[in-house]
Image (cartoon, one colour):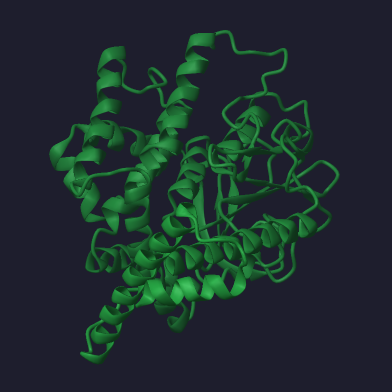
Length: 418
């Protein structure tokens, strides 16, 4: 029947004769229409019977293609927007010198001072810190061991009111008075230590001039993201007055372990100290005690720091664990790191990494570990590694050289001004 209808239609529209080629064409089309009719009938029956129909693969492909196009347009727009807002976002190896400010910031609350009558450094230093921040502990360990007088501004870790004046919203941060009365602002714990150590070694050069050797430099990481770091932060600027007992090998070893403390050891603390919310809360309660938050902050602000801080660090610890590819047994990673440190001490057959007395590497590792001294993690480390003897030997010397503590809460008064 269908073939007859097709023949009739062809005959009415075309005058040519029906040859064998035309006949084959008609038969093929007849078969195609028959298959299509059967498929349509089957689909119609499925719909009438309530059976579910599958989406066309072609429709899924179109949706995927549309989503990819929208994503590409959105990503390109965002990239263009960020480059317009930050005209230097594409630049690499930009050098930005340390910032110098004219006057000490107003309304800054100095919470305590460490004064040492034997301090001959001539440095006027204000340290902005969180008491138990590992990087802040590093800076304090060095300043205390060297017997340097300095003032402390305890920053609220949540509200950060005492660093609102600064473009940089992280600690540790120091303001050091230059010879002209202005203050050079330095961030990054290792850069701060290197700057102060360089100044102590050669007092002929103003600290502001030495700070120019530690500029901030931009670079792109392996993922193409722009990063900032401090150039030369593990180097001391001896100029032409290198100490006689300082060899290249000693310098390289010191830089190696200072880098290890920053890039490896410190990243093991959060995953260990904040494994559970209960442990995170216990840790922050110890932070409140060690940092004297009850003295320096109102109760509502103290509680805000404890509970918000514990919650935030509990979440961040999980992120850091994945980022640094740590196993669920995070304690084992800490034990391995400390065993590596003590094994090196045994290999050198010295009391400290610096020899008979602590060097910069010793003070860096000690500072990092002292940040968790009151936590369960540290207690476990004492039981499962040999770190205790070295740690308490360094601590004894740091405490012996530390200046006298004066607690105060002075608003808008420059460091050590009387």
